[in-house]
Image: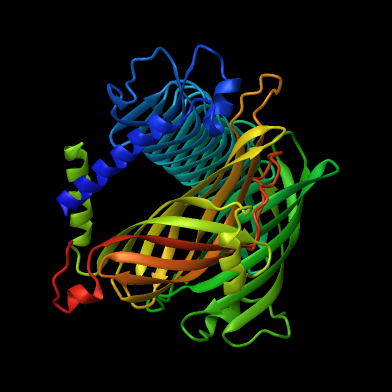
Length: 341
Length: 204
């Protein structure tokens, strides 16, 4: 098998050499790139590298502009206008086109797409970076998709497990999203917007006789909600997580939230499974001081009892349920009022 | 060079060491259709020299019936007024399901994932503040059939894009990707095949 691959590789290299030999300067996309490039760059229509010092054609030219740069180790070109592919592809200055491989690096800006395990464009990206780790120390205009994404400044979207940005304009979707400033939508379990975002605490009393607390965290437009509540007699607890959206309305705001969570019976340890509670809330927020505001609104509530119709659940409801409510699926309207700090 | 390939071969062998794991390395040819293509239309389109055909490599690791993979396709074309352009079509990572598992002689499969497609000018026009760029992102669902001929893989697939949109908050022009794409592919499969499981000797 090794022999076969080695033979195949040898054949590919020979083919590449032949292509380099027969490719006339100025023909094809290479020629187009040459005609517009500055004269200090030597056009390389096709290069095949093992290491920067071991390349075809020899990399002893002052500056190179590659159209197709392939490598089976580490490849280098000063500029790229086309395809750079291999294991580790390095572009010393600006690049455009596509880079694909294990590691892709552009020392300048990059326009196009980088596919790799690690993608780095030091001076900004217009286009797409997709891989395990995507980095740019300047502006990203486009998309980063991977496990960990970082852009000093982005306009577009970041999709990943962890997304981090300085200033952001657009969408951050992942498990953990961090931005210094974000004008847009963060979607994740934890969204941290350091400046200009929304971080508020709430306490309210609801129709079930429960005192609830909540942490709101995210951007000014879209935020995460984490709630914890307990009834007056401490017979049951609730906890939930959800998303909210806040819109300006006069001096105050109007909020829409959807949460999912559970209701646990403190005095019924044998009921191991909580009742699942889904809530949609709409409420107004009216400032009373610079830091404090009153909140009041209505909710649509749905509880599904995993234990199969535990009698305690309807007992804690206020008696008004929607007509489509059943023994196991309880639907009821709610009201609540409280304070936001 | 030998060392690099030895590492790759050892890596592939290590992955393939699991009983039902196969690593596929394939080359793809693909073209778009705005409407669902028929076999005749697809064959005619592949033969039409005017149609843009995207080409490039793909990889897939099939573990029992579940797989992860990616494809990276490109195409160069020249515009009389604005020069050379590079189109790309990328599915950086997709999730697949193979009905009969890794190494089956007849291998129907499905794939879902997210991708991007774009067009970038290869010309450097200093008069322009920014390089011209078309960019779209899309979810996709694909279905196809592959044949595993004792480690040599051939196949085809049909992809559907329910939504094709530029990235949010950007002013990029949408890449003109049609809603359907037909692709054919061929390559090698490192790992078990039906013939291997039946005890025949394989060249790999």
